[in-house]
Length: 379
Image (cartoon, one colour):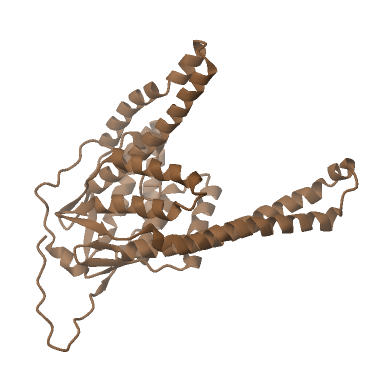
């Protein structure tokens, strides 16, 4: 990467801090609605085929082309045909992996062997889902261009999947305390293997640094469950008193329902507070410890901002029965652009394309079966 060289600062004068830059998203909901309406109509005519592949590609192109950095817009040059061809291949191969347990059961093989094969199939299903996630990331980044420079993802999808499964196995063993290491470890692998031109991102961080925020969330969940149980019982007692017989318990159905509702509301609120605390800290930590050459990042975020954002997404999906997915995707893009800060981004204009940065072939294949795409799950 060709980087402009800064002259040394005069003696006794501190160098100026790098200028702050932000991504800019200028998409409009009205424009997106018209595009989405066309995609829905074409999808209805083609039994959903157009909307799932070519429509998804048009949505991505809209989002990418409305994000700019230093007055240079991003481009997306993937095609619906790439997604469709790989999907057909995955559709043929995928069932062959999971026919064995039903086949053995039909042949009357012992139940123990059938159970073992079923467990292996579920593990294989998780493995393929994780491979597809990384493959989706590789495809999308390789189809992203900024300032004439193409992105790319190195590393191994199989290696990523094995790491993710290893962390997943650690969670029950550690009673969930491995979450910070899981979060940081997977972020490190994805980040260090992602780049633009001849430079990759670099992340230097440790899961232990997120243990404090996670313990707050962990304690909030445990204490919340205890508090919720107590308040739930008190609600039941206030309505029905102490039942003197099984018949009295059966007659206190309303009190039982009220107690259960109080339990879940209190538990969800307390868990949500812990969740917000952990992820706000996690987003900031991973951003400030990520570098791209001499460009640094920050992601300042408040808990109430994250809460409003996620609540808005849930309400949109619930009240539109999922039809608002593109608009939720737009909310993700806008949220990311609004909060991410870049420092020293002016040097990116000197970025050069690496001769070895190859354009990955094909589409997302299995990711289309799992529908586990990388940007918020909606793009």
